[in-house]
Amino acid sequence: MKKIFMPLFIILILVMSACGEDRSFIEDEYIVRNEAADQERDGRWEEVEGFLEMISEREVKTQRFYLYGSEPGFEKVPAVNFGYIPFYTNEELDIIEEIVPMANKNVRPGKMRAETKYIVIHNTGMASPVMTASRLSKSLQTSTRQASWHFTVDDREIYQELLLDEIGWHAGTPEGNNYGIGIEMAVYQGIDFNAAMRRTARLTAKLMLQYDLDLGDVKRHFDFSGKNCPQVLIESHRWEEFLGLVEMEYLGQKNFSDVTFIWESLTPAVLDNEGRVVSKSGEAASLRYRVRVILDGQERAYEFASLLKSLV
Ligand SMILES: [Zn+2]
Image 1 (cartoon, protein in one colour):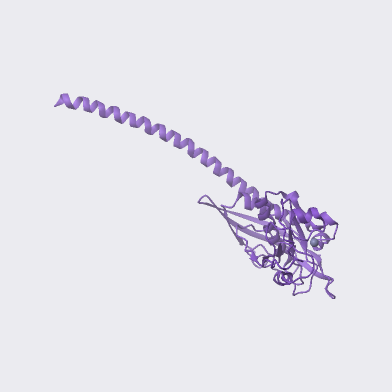
Image 2: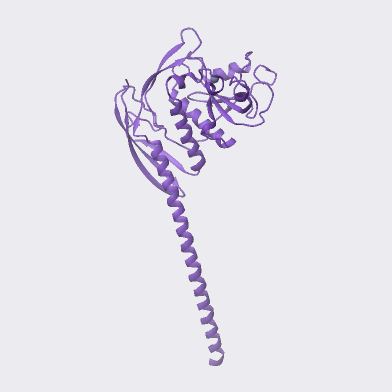
């Protein structure tokens, strides 16, 4: 019996030691791979933190400005920016399609863009309280003016009136019309203009990613034809602020689509969970807020404070 067991025993030991070597080899590789994954994840958290720093500007500005309209009595409507912090979330944009009937040749040139080079920002020159995005989109359906654009945005909604790759008449030059997607921001009396700006920025960033455009391709109507449009953004000196929002949305949509951001105001009497300043006092205040970030199954929380400047 011993004669049989001995070789078996030796074989068993050999097999075990071989397995042991394999296992230690696999474990080493596993550790290396894990370290690489950890490093990658640390890098991603650093990116997230840089992004959050960008959002949480230390000073939140407020200002009085004007909306401009062509309707009698609404030529220059006073408006107030009570301030906001652009809390970024990965919410999908809801776009309501109201494509103008092909038969309306004033609005539908019926030609497709050969190439998309620009996103052209406008604001409507209609400031009476009824001129919402919904109303504008409906009026475009039967419009007899030779004017058209792709999207109409306000503080609540987005409407699409032309096919995405179709040429519209909005920029005042062949270059702008033939190669640009036109977005109209509504500017009616009573609009939450900050919310409209943030929604327009989100849409702009989505289109930039879709067409591989960069921030320099986001243009004002003014850049093509010299028309004072988008007049509200230009005259209130908020164009750069708008581009900042577009940049944030672009980075968010490009780099953090798999990350969840949950914002909570820690000063709810002044700031809501959407980043909107709800206090209408115009007084300076401290804004504090927290964001929970979920990335790769890990959750971290960050707190920030910003100073709301007084309205002058
Ligand atoms: Zn325009």
